[in-house]
Structure formats: C-alpha cells, structure tokens
Image (tube, rainbow, N blue to C red):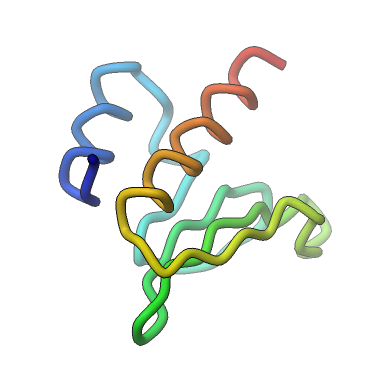
Length: 79
C-alpha cells in the first residue's frame, strides 16, 4: 500500500528530478502527471509538444495509482 506522501518520499529517495513530474500540480510539457480528479486518480505523460501519450491510466484506488506512477518514472529514468 502506498499513498501520495509516501510516493513523494520515495521519489526523493530515488533522486528523481522534481522537474520531471507533477503531483497534483500544474500540467506542462515533458512531465509525468499524477493527479486526483474528484474520486479517481490519473497518471500520464505530456510530451515536449504538449500531447498526452498512450500511457494514460485511471485508478479508483490511490495505492494502485501511486505504484503505477512510481513504475512509470523508474522506467523513464532507465531510458
């Protein structure tokens, strides 16, 4: 189980640059987005042209959303 605060702490521990993601913040290009929308969470990537890619996922469970987002960012760092 993971919540947003634990997700943020884990990202800090992994030294993932804060400029590469946004958690419940603004949406800009070349950034991974994690946000709560009413009763669900969504995760996606906005490319350098401002387009949303096909990695969009929507979750009804905060923990599942956090784990997916963490995985997305880990994969992106390795690339």
